[in-house]
Length: 114
Length: 112
Image (cartoon, rainbow over all chains, first blue to last red):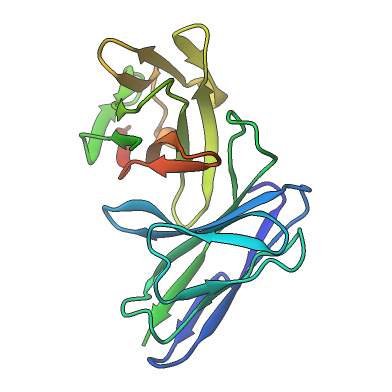
């Protein structure tokens, strides 16, 4: 899983609560990403950030928020507006703007809404 | 828009036999294609990529992939499957300036 850490590994949330998932990388990568993984649907992009203090919505940003105050950190908040938040969440990073750079993934956080 | 399709949800192969996991793509312009593997409850690991050059790309753990422009395919292959190859495999294509679009995944089971 390279130099990307995600915490916690498992997270349980009650309906109506906001929760924040942590993602930290020590690879000195510029770009960072959040994906959601559901069975049979592959990975869907939630948000991404190419530089500090800048981020863009992905395909399924509704009900989520992010911040990028430091190069190393890209936390994801799952808000109460997200109707079906139970999923496996993956964070990734990429070295730069070269089109052929692959993304490196963290180990993931499994969020369950009770 | 860029996209990839993985037509098989599940592939079963006997240990020692060759394996193929299929991927087809749809892109405007030159395709930049990737394969990743995911073990249970883990993140994705990069296997290989095609950017340009030889149509046969060699990657990690003995995997290779064949780029076929006329068939718009990028199938993942391995000459002799191991039980430890059992995992979920994702094909991906560069989408936009800095992003990837992932397929829905193919679960490979290698039977001892």
